[in-house]
Image 1: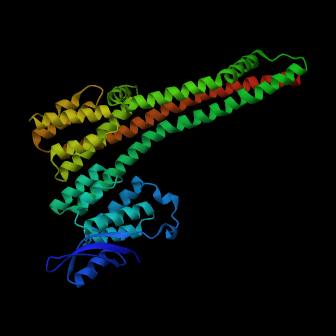
Image 2 (image 1 turned 90 degrees about the vertical axis):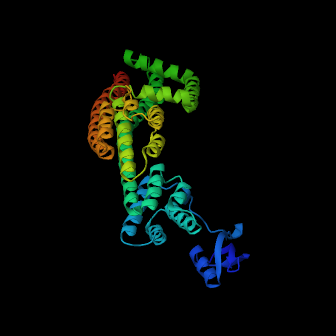
Image 3 (image 1 turned 180 degrees about the horizontal axis):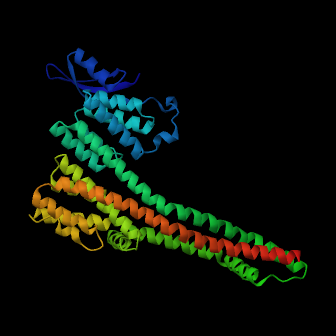
Amino acid sequence: MPEYSYVARSQGGKIQRGQMAAESLAALRSILESQGERLISAKSQEPPANLLPFRNPLDRLPARSITVEVALEQVAVMLESGLGILQALGTAAEQTTSQSMRTILQKVSEEIQEGDSLAEAMQRHKCFPLIAVQLARVGETTGNLDIVLRRAAEQMAARRENMSAVRTAVAYPAFVGIAAIGVAGYLVVFVIPELEKFLSSIGRRLPAITQSLLNLSIWIRTNGITVAILLVAVTIAMTLTYRVPKARVIVDRWLLRIPVMGKVLRLAGTVTFASSLGVMLRSGITVLEALRTVEGLHGNTHLASRVAVAREVVMEGGALAPPLAQKHGYMPMLSSMVAVGENTGQLDEVLARVTEFHEAQLQAAIKKLSALIEPLTIVVVGGIVGYVYLAFFMALFAAGG
């Protein structure tokens, strides 16, 4: 049973300090209340270092997005069924299979018992995105916490699925290419030179195609370390440059202009903007606060800067649509539909339709990207591997002849 050091106030207003063993913070509060004291703060006393239990290193990993989504959905269902927020959080903590998520939910529950709101408690934990915190804050104010938590879970799920689809479309050919280059490199650096030694020992020359590959092998072995150092240096330089805000904006703007891939990124950004803004407006968050949150959701800093500009325009009394119409930014339909929503007063409903349309467009663009990348990968990788294998087998035939 954990030991707590606590600060409480007696009925006469006197501050009391002490230590007490209790099963939980809630149990400690109940015990003190039965004694006529009101708990102000409490802190669990850690056992001595030599008595600390073994902890699985995997438990220290941050909670995954899907785990957070499930937890929010469970809490929303229990709130809808009439349970209190503390009981809902406790039950969700018991149900989750993630130790890190269980710990986070328990901490959120304790922070609420200490006087924080749900939104304030969630904001202390990075696993909860800003949109979920904002929605929770509105839900506590309006009394629709179950509804907004479900919307937050749905929003997180849609964002995760879209990002996963984009990563998968790019990761597959990259993995295939690296594997093929690795096999080809092994043949060039280790196998072909041994064949050359064997053929030289029996007085035979390498075929021309094999000789060209051998020359490449010699060059790689001679200059390989230098090339590797240069590649590492260039990679570090590019990474550091990308961390500079102005440089990152330029790079992100350039990425949006790449054929096919740029369209996928623009569609993904448009879906993020429309879905996030629509959900927050529908939940009662003001346009200015919603735009501030959407700005933080964008991974592409160029699109985030456009949201910042739009927010400043709205603060000055201007319309939201014009700043969104910049070329090579959001998809053109977004600004047009936002203008319609502003004129009709149904911006949240219009954004829902924009989201639905562009999500379908995003899935189609991802399929198109995959359809273009896979054949290109086959041609390039097949050409490299085919050249190496042809040179290899020509050397074998020369040795056998």
